[in-house]
Length: 177
Image (cartoon, rainbow, N blue to C red; front, side):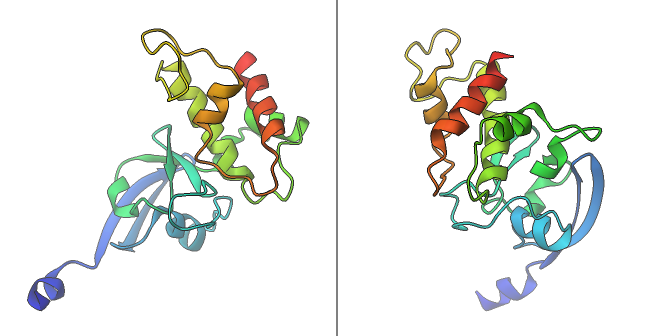
């Protein structure tokens, strides 16, 4: 077994598009997406909370879908697009979800906020695509967005401060536009 481990490649070259900018990097094959973003690209919005995929503080979008960056190995993303909280705003204007979080005070300490916002953006895309959740009553039709549906879909993102009512209100506002 030791011979196999010694022969395994430890570095890999990966090209991915992060917030619209192509990045080609040589990485240790064990590097998580979260560590790549924070330590190599200085994108510190995604936070390392539990480092086990349970809190959602590290949520980013990979090809538009939600991902816990602490669980994803960066080498698996070759050729994919990654959007972080820093990449949501465009032309100096906040993303509508970012603006709604500010307007509805959807944060207190702010630690979970980047993950909450990225998760909310991804969640609304899932809803628009017609994906049901565990709270969807009629899985044969388009899911209706109510507070229970939002809470279920956002259940992977924990807010230790308890700003959930304001987070739900922000998501409802953006979904209603």
